[in-house]
Image (cartoon, rainbow, N blue to C red; front, side):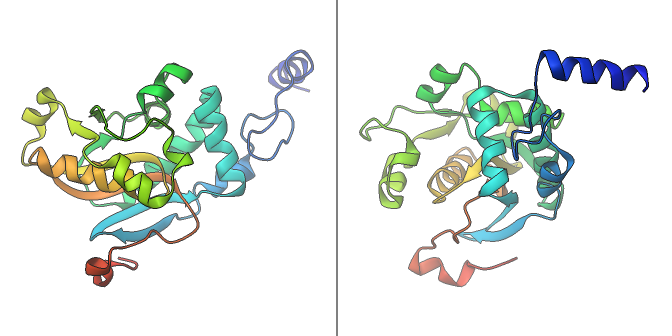
Length: 224
């Protein structure tokens, strides 16, 4: 047994580690689980804007995202970041602009999950910022699709400094998970309001069900 293997075995006894995705011992993220984020991803159009996600938000991928969001696990962030980097590479090119964590989430966690995953990929993105919302308090995940859309409307903007730098630029909106599409739509609206041209939405994962489209936009749904 080499020195590296011996140290790893000793560390596993003192500080047991298991895969955040499947529970396999001795690895924070096992190769099989990490590979699910590198398998080619998902593509759709959301109101005419290309949406690229590294994987579906289910099973192992959901567990990995949860470990990163709730524990700030760096190894998991790197695995998610590898998938996100591939999704970004597969999308139309543009300046990266990220969706920020909610104020409640930032207070509770002490970090921003999307920023953490981007750092895990060795990338940086200009942040949108939260605007005071008139919606009743509560997490987006606890709302229905219609409630999410209402709560998200007008909740994001690009700050003055980034607005001046990115005016007229192609922009890629980055988030961790796209569920109903309400936050992604609001991010696209905020980018357009700042004078940017949203060319893609990129996420670590999206929910398995297809994102709803408005009747007027039905012709833009599908794979691009």
